Image (cartoon, rainbow, N blue to C red):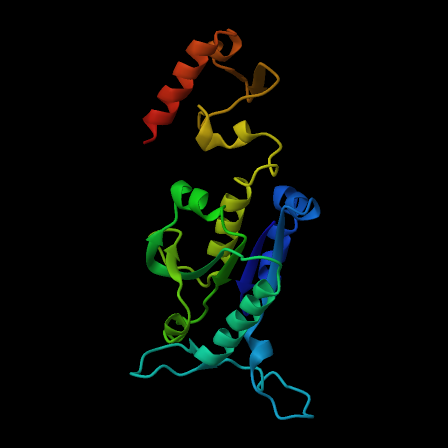
Length: 230
């Protein structure tokens, strides 16, 4: 089983997606597991005091000036440490990968997703605000990953993208290996019944080649469609 350990200030932001459809079924079948670690839970609070929102703050002003706030290193380090301790408690030697989401990181691709499915445990560090104190990356060996050439509000979306892409490659998740589009001839345009639909006086038909039953011609059509968008 592959376990995704997510370090995030907002675990609730991932719930709706990760607890639905294929990823939900993968969890129910025991093929994957998802665990959350909130850095706010690792802030030092005086013994006997009920922590307030202010006590659980983990952000502070950046050294060197600039707008926004930076997430402090120690709460994140302790959250990662907690995840690694839970991994070490497993029987046998576990394969672990720690990911730090960054817009300047290595581009996440299908090839990267394939390489990650071999890990039993993947720790994902999700930043917010102006980012996380860089000393976190000095405390643990980790890989910077980017899901695209743009900046997002936090690392939660990239985490969901990675979990989705990696999970669907795990044997048994999709039911059949040929369901992984990248491993077969697939077109960006797909069709289903009925053969003809009508909308505002116009008829829209399924391409004849897909009705022919001629597999070689259908594969050729799919390849042409695929190459036309590359």
